[in-house]
Image (cartoon, rainbow, N blue to C red; front, side, top):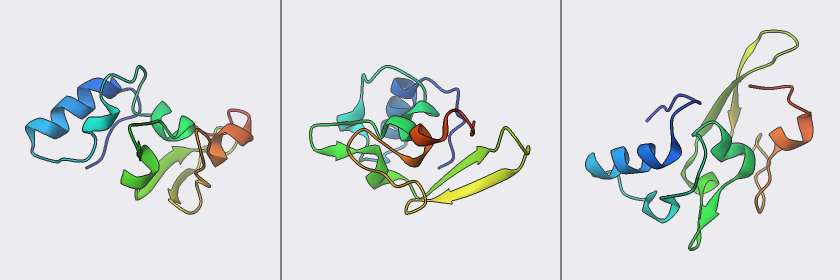
Length: 91
C-alpha cells in the first residue's frame, strides 16, 4: 500500500481495516498525517509504524531528487527517525 504524505492518519487506519489489512489498528486516533508518521515513528499499544513500513519515499528539498529510503535507512528508534535529524531537508 502506498500512502500520500498529506493523508489524515486516522483515515488511513480506517481504510486499511475496511480493506482487511490488519496491523495498524493499534495506531488509530493518533493525530497527524501519514507523512508525519514515519518522521515521529508513531506508536501505541506495542506497535510502531516502523514495523509496518518497507520504504519511505521523500524529496530532497535542496536537490529536488526523489529518494526511496529503506527501513534501515530511516534509522527508526523510539519516537525518532533519520528525518528528524535532517532539519527539514526532506519532504
